[in-house]
Image (tube, rainbow, N blue to C red):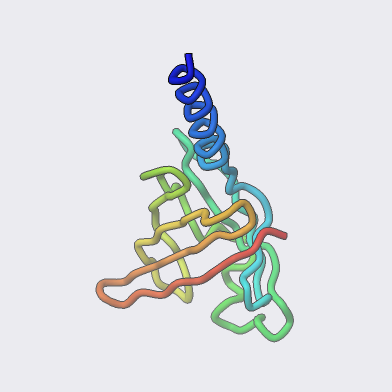
Length: 127
């Protein structure tokens, strides 16, 4: 009886610990931690793919390189590869990078893009 109670408690605790990871939702409005840009992240395509559209730029971030992306999708069809992780292509400053999106908390997201051996990471917070 004692073993059954411990097993039931452990199963419940494991279920509660796993549930947030499985239920995490990356959709919504995200802002770079520098505060210069905001993005609308949504599901698109099939099987939980993610897309992100650049929706806002701070005045000092409205550069000739950044303005063409305003109102456009900068992440297209990122496919889920693990819990809270997606991979896809990222457009930035006229280049296309292989990228990954990782939801590191309910209100924190990391984006990493690579072009060959050159990589860049950015952190975002939910708005």
